[in-house]
Image (cartoon, rainbow, N blue to C red):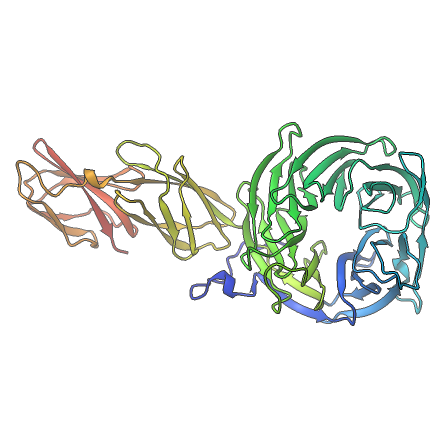
Length: 532
């Protein structure tokens, strides 16, 4: 894995929504006569990389070792189905399919097993399994279909949404004899649409209940539910746990839904951290999310693939995207089905239902983040509903009731920020976005009632020019002293007034500062805008 901490393109003339890609480049596209569905990757012992793609007619195996020139190697026909899922263990692929159509002439495969060592043969080696399984109620069911599957690091395959029982998770041992997996147990309290497993913990997606379910599967034939938690749009399709097992990411397979992050370090106190949509459209449907180191790679039906930096999961930041289906937009089950990001080459392979197989080259960028604190410069009270605008990052947000706001961007540039609130002097200053850093910026706003131009014992006081380059005049004030204060209330310099002229001792960055002038028993504070 080779992350790159670069901010690539600055979209100064166009918003992100006008773009079809960010930090992801197209290497190649392969089309099919049939629609695609899910996708997975396989790397041989010699380092060759292959895309394993589901189509409505079967399984396609394509070599993508040269990402610019994919080669179709094998196609294994199966029953006609719009749902297939694929995973690997050792040099074997395991494939499930969901409901088929009545006119199918090919029997349901149950579990299809492909020997990937036969990729280069004239005819691939594969077989199907339809084991008979006893349900918790004692009846016997034959495995015919399953919606999804996952194989954990210990070599156990979990088949989700099968036709057996309620369709929870059927567990098979594939490590002992990969060609002849053995059924070892199940979890069947809920129907699971999808799920993933690590360390004997199932993170299951109970789509129709709108929640994820955490299951202890240490004892395969005696699984125990540990916790459940609802997801924002109550149609939980996909779950994926972070590498340190502390943060869970979910998607809801419904329009206007989110990729959501939860702190699951304490299952008795699961907490939502943040949620995010793709900049290519808020009404689109998120589908499958996969954690890749600190990033989350997510497929969206009509908006391609998205890369989110989740290094700080309390503030998820989009740092890349590629639209594989520009002909479609909005809410609909078209376009990108899945994205696989786990090749050593860093290539991402995507299955687009109508457009076929995409091989993409991502540049993994670390996001820049800032935590903002907005408060009254005199009373120190937090200020809510302040409008905060970053010019180059093109981000607009408001401070909360506690005067707080978080902002992030894929850029690493010098930006300018303005903070506006009715009744307060507008703050303007420069801000440096730094890749991989979660910065803190405190901004104090001066109440206009504390900015005077009249004094009972003195004539009107005028500061001009304003803005200025550090040299200006104060008319209407007697000899005295001054202090220059920044937006955080820090005293930058002080000096004496020389008649009515002031030249600051140092050069300061462009932005809004405050000049406090004292003469006799009187004092006034003026906002000063310094030019670059």
